[in-house]
Length: 92
Image 1: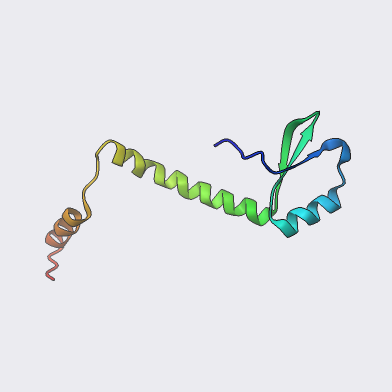
Image 2: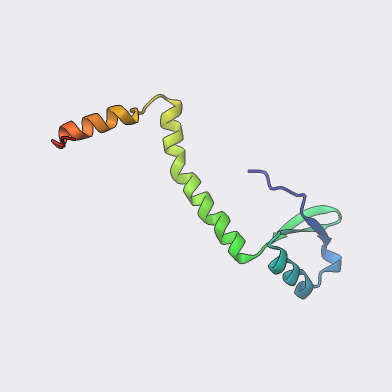
């Protein structure tokens, strides 16, 4: 995934941590730090970072399912439930 570098840019020369952290904390927006005009690092609110990590974990769990779908290795819901009911002797 390519990061979105449309965040506010701050040169590392002008680095004053307290005002930057306050801005990140209040806006919940990440800030890209640059060095000689090139992106070097991203500072972000820890809670927002944790959300991203959790979301990434969920995406990793979905990857095998997406691969199965791409390879047509799945059963339709109706067929699955009919088979499940039959195997477990469920009558509704």
